[in-house]
Image 1 (cartoon, rainbow, N blue to C red):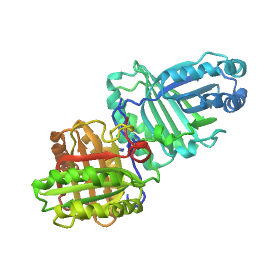
Image 2 (cartoon, helix red, strand yellow):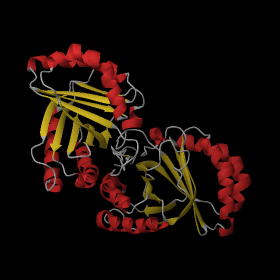
Image 3 (cartoon, rainbow, N blue to C red):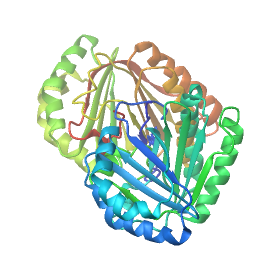
Image 4 (cartoon, one colour):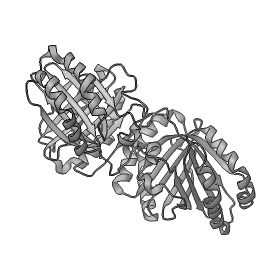
Length: 482
Protein backbone atom coordinates (compact mmCIF):
# COMPACT_ATOMS: atom_id res chain seq x y z
CA UNK A 1 0.00 0.00 0.00
CA UNK A 2 1.09 3.49 -0.62
CA UNK A 3 1.71 5.72 2.31
CA UNK A 4 0.95 9.33 1.76
CA UNK A 5 3.54 11.48 3.46
CA UNK A 6 3.19 15.10 4.27
CA UNK A 7 4.41 17.45 6.92
CA UNK A 8 1.84 19.25 8.99
CA UNK A 9 3.48 22.13 10.87
CA UNK A 10 1.04 24.50 12.52
CA UNK A 11 3.67 27.00 13.60
CA UNK A 12 4.73 30.16 11.82
CA UNK A 13 1.38 31.06 10.40
CA UNK A 14 0.96 27.68 9.08
CA UNK A 15 1.75 22.37 8.73
CA UNK A 16 -0.09 15.15 4.78
CA UNK A 17 -0.48 15.08 3.20
CA UNK A 18 0.32 14.96 4.40
CA UNK A 19 0.38 14.86 4.24
CA UNK A 20 2.73 13.34 7.93
CA UNK A 21 1.39 13.80 5.57
CA UNK A 22 1.28 12.92 5.30
CA UNK A 23 1.29 11.79 7.57
CA UNK A 24 1.97 11.15 10.19
CA UNK A 25 1.66 11.94 7.17
CA UNK A 26 2.51 11.12 5.68
CA UNK A 27 2.28 12.00 7.16
CA UNK A 28 1.54 10.64 8.37
CA UNK A 29 1.08 9.68 6.78
CA UNK A 30 -1.87 9.11 2.99
CA UNK A 31 -3.65 6.80 1.61
CA UNK A 32 -1.58 5.28 -0.78
CA UNK A 33 1.13 2.69 -1.01
CA UNK A 34 4.81 2.86 -1.54
CA UNK A 35 7.65 0.46 -2.26
CA UNK A 36 9.71 1.17 0.88
CA UNK A 37 7.56 -0.98 3.14
CA UNK A 38 8.34 -1.69 6.78
CA UNK A 39 7.88 -5.23 8.08
CA UNK A 40 6.23 -5.66 11.48
CA UNK A 41 6.13 -8.71 13.71
CA UNK A 42 3.60 -8.62 16.54
CA UNK A 43 3.80 -11.29 19.24
CA UNK A 44 1.25 -11.66 22.02
CA UNK A 45 2.03 -13.92 24.99
CA UNK A 46 -0.55 -14.98 27.58
CA UNK A 47 -0.34 -16.77 30.88
CA UNK A 48 2.43 -14.45 32.10
CA UNK A 49 2.94 -14.25 35.85
CA UNK A 50 2.30 -10.55 36.62
CA UNK A 51 5.16 -10.72 39.14
CA UNK A 52 7.53 -11.50 36.24
CA UNK A 53 6.54 -8.56 34.04
CA UNK A 54 9.09 -6.15 35.52
CA UNK A 55 11.90 -8.70 35.12
CA UNK A 56 10.88 -9.41 31.52
CA UNK A 57 11.01 -5.69 30.77
CA UNK A 58 14.43 -5.33 32.40
CA UNK A 59 15.93 -8.31 30.59
CA UNK A 60 14.43 -7.17 27.30
CA UNK A 61 15.72 -3.64 27.67
CA UNK A 62 19.20 -4.56 28.89
CA UNK A 63 19.90 -7.63 26.76
CA UNK A 64 17.44 -8.30 23.93
CA UNK A 65 17.00 -4.73 22.70
CA UNK A 66 20.72 -4.02 22.21
CA UNK A 67 20.97 -7.13 20.01
CA UNK A 68 18.13 -6.16 17.70
CA UNK A 69 19.14 -2.48 17.64
CA UNK A 70 22.47 -3.55 16.16
CA UNK A 71 20.79 -5.75 13.55
CA UNK A 72 20.59 -4.67 9.92
CA UNK A 73 17.32 -2.98 9.02
CA UNK A 74 16.20 -2.26 12.57
CA UNK A 75 13.44 0.37 12.64
CA UNK A 76 11.76 0.11 16.02
CA UNK A 77 10.60 -1.98 18.96
CA UNK A 78 7.83 -1.75 21.58
CA UNK A 79 7.12 -3.91 24.62
CA UNK A 80 3.71 -3.64 26.24
CA UNK A 81 2.87 -5.64 29.40
CA UNK A 82 -0.71 -5.93 30.64
CA UNK A 83 -1.53 -8.13 33.63
CA UNK A 84 -1.10 -11.73 32.38
CA UNK A 85 -0.46 -10.70 28.77
CA UNK A 86 2.59 -9.30 27.04
CA UNK A 87 2.88 -7.85 23.53
CA UNK A 88 6.04 -7.13 21.58
CA UNK A 89 6.14 -5.22 18.30
CA UNK A 90 9.33 -5.22 16.24
CA UNK A 91 9.82 -3.23 13.03
CA UNK A 92 12.44 -3.93 10.37
CA UNK A 93 12.97 -2.82 6.80
CA UNK A 94 12.39 -6.39 5.55
CA UNK A 95 11.09 -9.73 6.78
CA UNK A 96 14.49 -11.27 6.05
CA UNK A 97 16.24 -8.76 8.31
CA UNK A 98 13.70 -9.42 11.07
CA UNK A 99 14.35 -13.17 10.80
CA UNK A 100 18.12 -12.63 10.88
CA UNK A 101 17.79 -10.47 13.99
CA UNK A 102 15.68 -13.11 15.73
CA UNK A 103 18.34 -15.68 14.90
CA UNK A 104 21.04 -13.47 16.46
CA UNK A 105 18.97 -13.15 19.63
CA UNK A 106 17.89 -16.79 19.78
CA UNK A 107 20.38 -17.95 22.43
CA UNK A 108 19.78 -14.90 24.63
CA UNK A 109 16.00 -15.41 24.46
CA UNK A 110 16.26 -19.12 25.20
CA UNK A 111 18.41 -18.55 28.27
CA UNK A 112 16.90 -15.38 29.72
CA UNK A 113 13.36 -14.80 28.46
CA UNK A 114 11.87 -18.16 27.50
CA UNK A 115 11.69 -19.36 31.15
CA UNK A 116 9.44 -16.39 31.92
CA UNK A 117 7.16 -16.94 28.89
CA UNK A 118 5.20 -20.14 29.59
CA UNK A 119 3.14 -20.25 26.38
CA UNK A 120 4.09 -19.82 22.71
CA UNK A 121 3.00 -16.45 21.31
CA UNK A 122 0.27 -15.60 18.88
CA UNK A 123 2.14 -14.04 15.94
CA UNK A 124 0.78 -11.61 13.36
CA UNK A 125 3.19 -10.30 10.75
CA UNK A 126 2.78 -7.96 7.82
CA UNK A 127 3.61 -4.60 6.28
CA UNK A 128 2.91 -1.17 7.72
CA UNK A 129 0.01 0.52 5.94
CA UNK A 130 -0.26 3.65 8.11
CA UNK A 131 2.52 5.30 10.11
CA UNK A 132 2.72 8.36 12.31
CA UNK A 133 5.61 9.43 14.54
CA UNK A 134 5.24 12.74 16.37
CA UNK A 135 8.83 13.29 17.41
CA UNK A 136 11.44 10.77 16.36
CA UNK A 137 14.10 12.34 18.61
CA UNK A 138 12.02 11.71 21.73
CA UNK A 139 11.64 8.07 20.74
CA UNK A 140 15.39 7.40 20.34
CA UNK A 141 16.22 5.81 23.64
CA UNK A 142 18.33 3.01 25.06
CA UNK A 143 16.59 2.63 28.39
CA UNK A 144 12.93 2.56 27.39
CA UNK A 145 10.34 5.23 28.03
CA UNK A 146 8.05 4.39 30.89
CA UNK A 147 5.80 7.45 30.68
CA UNK A 148 4.10 6.38 27.45
CA UNK A 149 0.87 4.39 27.27
CA UNK A 150 -0.20 2.25 24.35
CA UNK A 151 -3.03 0.16 22.98
CA UNK A 152 -2.48 -2.78 20.65
CA UNK A 153 -5.51 -4.18 18.83
CA UNK A 154 -5.52 -7.28 16.62
CA UNK A 155 -8.54 -7.85 14.36
CA UNK A 156 -9.06 -11.42 13.17
CA UNK A 157 -11.24 -12.07 10.14
CA UNK A 158 -10.61 -8.67 8.55
CA UNK A 159 -12.01 -8.41 5.02
CA UNK A 160 -8.98 -7.27 2.99
CA UNK A 161 -11.18 -5.95 0.19
CA UNK A 162 -11.82 -2.98 2.51
CA UNK A 163 -8.17 -2.43 3.37
CA UNK A 164 -7.59 0.55 1.04
CA UNK A 165 -10.77 2.25 2.21
CA UNK A 166 -9.88 1.64 5.86
CA UNK A 167 -6.39 3.07 5.44
CA UNK A 168 -7.73 6.15 3.67
CA UNK A 169 -10.27 6.79 6.44
CA UNK A 170 -7.68 6.29 9.18
CA UNK A 171 -5.36 8.87 7.63
CA UNK A 172 -7.93 11.39 6.51
CA UNK A 173 -10.30 11.26 9.53
CA UNK A 174 -8.97 9.30 12.50
CA UNK A 175 -5.40 10.61 12.70
CA UNK A 176 -6.42 14.26 12.30
CA UNK A 177 -8.97 13.77 15.12
CA UNK A 178 -6.30 12.30 17.38
CA UNK A 179 -3.90 15.11 16.54
CA UNK A 180 -6.58 17.70 17.18
CA UNK A 181 -6.96 16.41 20.73
CA UNK A 182 -3.22 16.07 21.34
CA UNK A 183 -1.00 13.50 22.97
CA UNK A 184 -0.44 11.16 20.01
CA UNK A 185 3.17 9.95 19.98
CA UNK A 186 3.00 7.27 17.29
CA UNK A 187 0.54 5.16 15.34
CA UNK A 188 1.01 2.07 13.19
CA UNK A 189 -1.56 0.21 11.13
CA UNK A 190 -0.48 -3.19 9.81
CA UNK A 191 -2.09 -5.75 7.50
CA UNK A 192 -0.98 -9.37 7.19
CA UNK A 193 -2.30 -9.60 3.61
CA UNK A 194 -4.72 -12.41 4.49
CA UNK A 195 -7.33 -11.73 7.16
CA UNK A 196 -5.73 -9.89 10.07
CA UNK A 197 -5.18 -6.22 10.84
CA UNK A 198 -3.15 -4.73 13.68
CA UNK A 199 -3.33 -1.26 15.19
CA UNK A 200 -0.78 0.16 17.64
CA UNK A 201 -1.48 3.57 19.19
CA UNK A 202 1.07 5.17 21.52
CA UNK A 203 -0.06 8.15 23.59
CA UNK A 204 1.73 10.53 25.94
CA UNK A 205 -0.20 9.50 29.07
CA UNK A 206 -2.87 7.17 30.41
CA UNK A 207 -5.43 9.98 30.21
CA UNK A 208 -4.55 10.64 26.58
CA UNK A 209 -4.79 6.93 25.84
CA UNK A 210 -8.35 6.86 27.16
CA UNK A 211 -9.27 9.98 25.19
CA UNK A 212 -7.81 8.30 22.10
CA UNK A 213 -9.88 5.20 22.76
CA UNK A 214 -13.05 7.30 22.95
CA UNK A 215 -12.16 8.94 19.63
CA UNK A 216 -11.42 5.51 18.15
CA UNK A 217 -14.75 4.10 19.30
CA UNK A 218 -16.66 6.97 17.69
CA UNK A 219 -14.60 6.65 14.51
CA UNK A 220 -15.16 2.90 14.22
CA UNK A 221 -18.87 3.27 14.88
CA UNK A 222 -19.28 5.95 12.24
CA UNK A 223 -17.01 4.66 9.48
CA UNK A 224 -15.81 1.07 9.94
CA UNK A 225 -18.57 -0.81 11.74
CA UNK A 226 -19.79 -2.57 8.59
CA UNK A 227 -16.55 -4.42 7.96
CA UNK A 228 -14.30 -4.20 11.02
CA UNK A 229 -14.48 -7.43 13.07
CA UNK A 230 -16.03 -7.17 16.52
CA UNK A 231 -14.12 -7.92 19.72
CA UNK A 232 -10.47 -7.50 18.70
CA UNK A 233 -7.71 -8.67 21.00
CA UNK A 234 -6.91 -5.55 23.03
CA UNK A 235 -3.79 -5.04 25.11
CA UNK A 236 -3.35 -1.66 26.74
CA UNK A 237 -1.21 -0.13 29.42
CA UNK A 238 2.09 1.53 30.13
CA UNK A 239 4.88 0.80 27.68
CA UNK A 240 7.88 -0.93 29.27
CA UNK A 241 10.23 -0.47 26.30
CA UNK A 242 9.95 1.83 23.30
CA UNK A 243 12.81 2.42 20.86
CA UNK A 244 13.39 3.58 17.30
CA UNK A 245 16.50 3.40 15.14
CA UNK A 246 19.27 5.77 16.16
CA UNK A 247 19.94 6.77 12.59
CA UNK A 248 17.51 9.16 11.02
CA UNK A 249 14.33 7.86 12.59
CA UNK A 250 12.65 10.72 10.78
CA UNK A 251 13.68 9.29 7.42
CA UNK A 252 12.14 5.87 7.96
CA UNK A 253 9.18 6.68 10.17
CA UNK A 254 8.31 10.34 9.65
CA UNK A 255 5.28 10.59 7.53
CA UNK A 256 2.43 12.57 8.94
CA UNK A 257 4.41 14.59 11.39
CA UNK A 258 3.64 17.85 13.14
CA UNK A 259 7.22 18.84 13.88
CA UNK A 260 9.00 22.15 14.04
CA UNK A 261 10.85 21.55 10.76
CA UNK A 262 9.85 23.88 7.95
CA UNK A 263 10.38 24.43 4.27
CA UNK A 264 10.46 28.01 3.00
CA UNK A 265 8.81 28.58 -0.38
CA UNK A 266 9.06 31.44 -2.82
CA UNK A 267 6.65 31.59 -5.77
CA UNK A 268 7.40 34.14 -8.49
CA UNK A 269 4.98 34.72 -11.34
CA UNK A 270 6.17 36.73 -14.37
CA UNK A 271 3.71 38.03 -16.95
CA UNK A 272 4.21 39.58 -20.37
CA UNK A 273 6.76 36.91 -21.29
CA UNK A 274 7.10 36.31 -25.05
CA UNK A 275 5.90 32.71 -25.59
CA UNK A 276 8.63 32.34 -28.18
CA UNK A 277 11.19 32.85 -25.39
CA UNK A 278 9.80 30.28 -22.97
CA UNK A 279 11.92 27.40 -24.29
CA UNK A 280 15.10 29.51 -24.09
CA UNK A 281 14.25 30.60 -20.56
CA UNK A 282 13.81 26.95 -19.55
CA UNK A 283 17.10 26.01 -21.23
CA UNK A 284 19.06 28.80 -19.53
CA UNK A 285 17.43 28.02 -16.19
CA UNK A 286 18.28 24.33 -16.40
CA UNK A 287 21.82 24.88 -17.70
CA UNK A 288 22.90 27.80 -15.52
CA UNK A 289 20.49 28.93 -12.82
CA UNK A 290 19.46 25.51 -11.44
CA UNK A 291 23.04 24.29 -10.81
CA UNK A 292 23.63 27.39 -8.66
CA UNK A 293 20.45 26.69 -6.70
CA UNK A 294 21.23 23.00 -6.26
CA UNK A 295 24.69 23.84 -5.00
CA UNK A 296 23.34 26.26 -2.40
CA UNK A 297 22.97 25.36 1.27
CA UNK A 298 19.46 24.30 2.25
CA UNK A 299 18.21 23.60 -1.28
CA UNK A 300 15.03 21.53 -1.21
CA UNK A 301 13.40 21.83 -4.62
CA UNK A 302 12.65 23.91 -7.70
CA UNK A 303 9.87 23.95 -10.31
CA UNK A 304 9.53 26.06 -13.46
CA UNK A 305 6.13 26.31 -15.12
CA UNK A 306 5.30 28.14 -18.37
CA UNK A 307 1.73 29.00 -19.42
CA UNK A 308 1.23 31.31 -22.40
CA UNK A 309 2.82 34.65 -21.59
CA UNK A 310 3.17 33.75 -17.90
CA UNK A 311 6.02 32.00 -16.14
CA UNK A 312 6.05 30.69 -12.57
CA UNK A 313 9.10 29.67 -10.58
CA UNK A 314 8.75 27.80 -7.29
CA UNK A 315 11.88 27.50 -5.15
CA UNK A 316 12.10 25.71 -1.81
CA UNK A 317 14.80 25.99 0.84
CA UNK A 318 15.17 24.99 4.47
CA UNK A 319 15.09 28.66 5.51
CA UNK A 320 14.43 32.13 4.02
CA UNK A 321 18.04 33.07 4.77
CA UNK A 322 19.32 30.21 2.63
CA UNK A 323 16.89 31.13 -0.15
CA UNK A 324 18.15 34.71 -0.06
CA UNK A 325 21.78 33.59 -0.13
CA UNK A 326 21.06 31.36 -3.13
CA UNK A 327 19.39 34.24 -5.00
CA UNK A 328 22.40 36.42 -4.25
CA UNK A 329 24.72 33.73 -5.60
CA UNK A 330 22.68 33.57 -8.81
CA UNK A 331 22.23 37.35 -9.18
CA UNK A 332 24.97 37.80 -11.79
CA UNK A 333 23.76 34.91 -13.94
CA UNK A 334 20.15 36.08 -13.79
CA UNK A 335 21.02 39.68 -14.69
CA UNK A 336 23.07 38.63 -17.71
CA UNK A 337 21.04 35.71 -19.07
CA UNK A 338 17.44 35.70 -17.80
CA UNK A 339 16.48 39.28 -16.99
CA UNK A 340 16.49 40.37 -20.68
CA UNK A 341 13.80 37.74 -21.35
CA UNK A 342 11.62 38.73 -18.38
CA UNK A 343 10.21 42.18 -19.19
CA UNK A 344 8.16 42.72 -16.02
CA UNK A 345 8.91 42.41 -12.34
CA UNK A 346 7.40 39.28 -10.82
CA UNK A 347 4.58 38.92 -8.35
CA UNK A 348 6.19 37.26 -5.32
CA UNK A 349 4.44 35.26 -2.61
CA UNK A 350 6.55 33.61 0.09
CA UNK A 351 5.94 31.58 3.21
CA UNK A 352 6.45 28.29 5.06
CA UNK A 353 4.89 25.05 3.83
CA UNK A 354 1.86 23.89 5.75
CA UNK A 355 1.07 20.93 3.49
CA UNK A 356 3.97 19.01 2.04
CA UNK A 357 3.20 15.84 0.09
CA UNK A 358 5.66 14.43 -2.45
CA UNK A 359 5.27 11.09 -4.19
CA UNK A 360 8.79 10.94 -5.64
CA UNK A 361 11.31 8.37 -4.40
CA UNK A 362 13.73 9.73 -1.84
CA UNK A 363 16.63 8.49 -3.98
CA UNK A 364 15.41 10.47 -6.98
CA UNK A 365 17.80 13.09 -8.33
CA UNK A 366 14.99 14.94 -10.01
CA UNK A 367 11.38 13.84 -10.16
CA UNK A 368 11.44 10.06 -10.14
CA UNK A 369 12.02 9.47 -13.84
CA UNK A 370 8.61 10.79 -14.82
CA UNK A 371 8.79 12.30 -18.31
CA UNK A 372 6.04 14.88 -17.94
CA UNK A 373 4.60 16.74 -14.99
CA UNK A 374 1.81 19.30 -14.95
CA UNK A 375 1.05 21.85 -12.28
CA UNK A 376 -1.72 24.12 -11.12
CA UNK A 377 -0.80 27.08 -8.89
CA UNK A 378 -3.70 28.85 -7.17
CA UNK A 379 -3.60 32.11 -5.20
CA UNK A 380 -6.37 32.85 -2.70
CA UNK A 381 -6.16 36.57 -1.93
CA UNK A 382 -8.11 38.21 0.88
CA UNK A 383 -7.97 35.02 2.96
CA UNK A 384 -8.80 35.44 6.64
CA UNK A 385 -5.68 33.85 8.13
CA UNK A 386 -7.24 33.66 11.58
CA UNK A 387 -8.90 30.51 10.22
CA UNK A 388 -5.88 29.19 8.34
CA UNK A 389 -5.07 26.36 10.77
CA UNK A 390 -8.65 25.12 10.53
CA UNK A 391 -8.61 25.45 6.74
CA UNK A 392 -5.29 23.62 6.59
CA UNK A 393 -6.67 20.68 8.60
CA UNK A 394 -9.68 20.52 6.32
CA UNK A 395 -7.42 20.53 3.27
CA UNK A 396 -5.46 17.59 4.67
CA UNK A 397 -8.52 15.55 5.62
CA UNK A 398 -10.76 16.45 2.65
CA UNK A 399 -8.88 18.06 -0.24
CA UNK A 400 -5.78 15.87 -0.35
CA UNK A 401 -7.70 12.57 -0.56
CA UNK A 402 -9.87 14.08 -3.32
CA UNK A 403 -6.73 15.06 -5.23
CA UNK A 404 -5.36 11.54 -4.82
CA UNK A 405 -8.55 10.08 -6.26
CA UNK A 406 -7.88 11.91 -9.52
CA UNK A 407 -4.87 9.63 -10.07
CA UNK A 408 -1.26 10.52 -10.73
CA UNK A 409 -0.87 13.05 -7.94
CA UNK A 410 2.85 13.77 -7.71
CA UNK A 411 2.94 16.57 -5.14
CA UNK A 412 0.69 18.86 -3.14
CA UNK A 413 1.93 21.99 -1.38
CA UNK A 414 0.24 24.79 0.51
CA UNK A 415 1.37 27.84 2.46
CA UNK A 416 0.35 31.38 3.34
CA UNK A 417 2.24 34.66 3.18
CA UNK A 418 1.39 35.70 6.75
CA UNK A 419 -0.86 38.54 5.57
CA UNK A 420 -3.86 37.68 3.40
CA UNK A 421 -2.84 35.21 0.68
CA UNK A 422 -2.88 31.41 0.60
CA UNK A 423 -1.15 29.45 -2.15
CA UNK A 424 -1.99 25.91 -3.25
CA UNK A 425 0.20 23.98 -5.67
CA UNK A 426 -0.92 20.68 -7.23
CA UNK A 427 1.42 18.64 -9.42
CA UNK A 428 0.23 15.67 -11.46
CA UNK A 429 1.64 13.21 -13.96
CA UNK A 430 -1.08 14.12 -16.47
CA UNK A 431 -2.62 17.28 -17.88
CA UNK A 432 -6.20 16.03 -17.50
CA UNK A 433 -5.88 15.41 -13.78
CA UNK A 434 -4.22 18.80 -13.34
CA UNK A 435 -7.14 20.60 -14.94
CA UNK A 436 -9.59 18.48 -12.95
CA UNK A 437 -7.77 19.47 -9.77
CA UNK A 438 -8.88 23.07 -10.32
CA UNK A 439 -12.50 21.94 -10.20
CA UNK A 440 -11.82 19.81 -7.13
CA UNK A 441 -10.17 22.78 -5.45
CA UNK A 442 -13.05 25.05 -6.39
CA UNK A 443 -15.64 22.63 -4.99
CA UNK A 444 -13.62 22.24 -1.79
CA UNK A 445 -13.36 26.02 -1.38
CA UNK A 446 -17.09 26.53 -1.88
CA UNK A 447 -18.04 23.77 0.56
CA UNK A 448 -15.53 24.43 3.34
CA UNK A 449 -13.76 27.77 2.96
CA UNK A 450 -16.34 30.20 1.59
CA UNK A 451 -16.52 32.21 4.82
CA UNK A 452 -12.75 32.71 4.97
CA UNK A 453 -11.79 32.91 1.29
CA UNK A 454 -14.22 35.41 -0.25
CA UNK A 455 -12.37 35.86 -3.55
CA UNK A 456 -12.12 33.23 -6.31
CA UNK A 457 -8.56 31.96 -6.77
CA UNK A 458 -6.29 33.22 -9.52
CA UNK A 459 -3.31 31.41 -10.97
CA UNK A 460 -1.94 29.43 -13.86
CA UNK A 461 -1.68 25.81 -14.98
CA UNK A 462 0.44 23.99 -17.51
CA UNK A 463 3.32 21.64 -18.15
CA UNK A 464 6.35 21.87 -15.89
CA UNK A 465 9.54 22.58 -17.77
CA UNK A 466 11.87 21.90 -14.83
CA UNK A 467 11.22 19.82 -11.71
CA UNK A 468 14.12 19.16 -9.38
CA UNK A 469 14.42 18.02 -5.77
CA UNK A 470 17.42 17.84 -3.46
CA UNK A 471 19.73 14.93 -4.16
CA UNK A 472 20.58 14.05 -0.56
CA UNK A 473 17.96 12.27 1.53
CA UNK A 474 14.85 13.97 0.30
CA UNK A 475 13.10 12.35 3.26
CA UNK A 476 14.91 14.75 5.60
CA UNK A 477 13.58 17.93 4.05
CA UNK A 478 10.60 16.91 1.92
CA UNK A 479 8.94 13.83 3.38
CA UNK A 480 8.11 11.78 0.31
CA UNK A 481 6.92 8.29 -0.41
CA UNK A 482 9.30 5.76 -1.80
